[in-house]
Structure formats: C-alpha cells, structure tokens
Image (cartoon, rainbow, N blue to C red; front, side, top):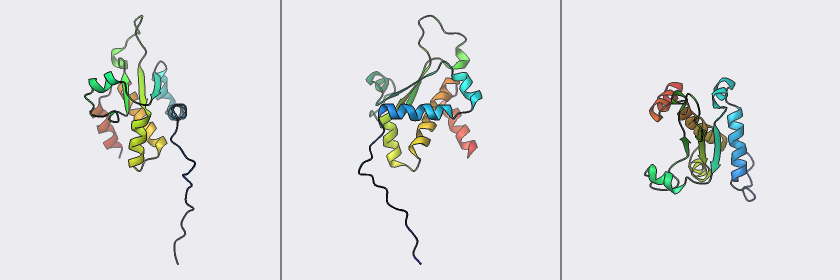
Length: 141
C-alpha cells in the first residue's frame, strides 16, 4: 500500500506578510506570553521595520542588512529606576525581511520564529545577555 500524500498547497496566490500583518503577528505573540512576563513590559514599544537603519548596521558591524533579526534599544529594567524627561521608552525592533529570510531556510513556522526573536529582544529588556539567553534555551531543551 502506498502512503497517502496530503494535498499540495497552492502557493501561486500567496505572498510574504506585509509590515502591518507582521505587526499583528508580533502583537499576537506578545499577548500569548505569560501575564507576569508582560506586566514588566507595559512601557515597552514594539516596532516592526523591513530592515535595520544604516547607523545600526554600522554600530553592529553587520556585513549585510539581513544579519540582524531584532534589536533592543533602551536601558534594561535593572538599570532603569525611573524614566528621565526626554528619555525614549525601551523599544524592541523586529526586522521583517531578515526574519523572512531565516524562515525560508529553516523548519520553524513564521509565528514561532517571530515569537523567538521577540522573546529574545524582551530578554534584553529584562537585562539578560545573549549568553544568558543561550544558556536558558539550552537548559530548556
């Protein structure tokens, strides 16, 4: 007996999600985080952009505009006792095109990848380093 194959998806009418659709995905991913986690993110701004700005690419010595998937900007909670007048709120930037590029090469769903990048950048909001988050992810597996 041969195995039954699922029907082929029709990709002819599909397109990459727009910036607005990506923002909706990021908002949904954020809403599904535990409430106690979100409570500490009340003033956090989440922005979706196609690519990092040129000054960000220079700062991080990125070789291509596809290198950064996300970025946290601001002072982490451990160093942010109060907001000074004129100080920008903490921000998480998600970069749509680099995330889409990684998604096309991997096995994760786009929603899972968006959530992963969002949680990673929020980790910086909490004061975690990349090494801290890598260790936490390894321990979780």
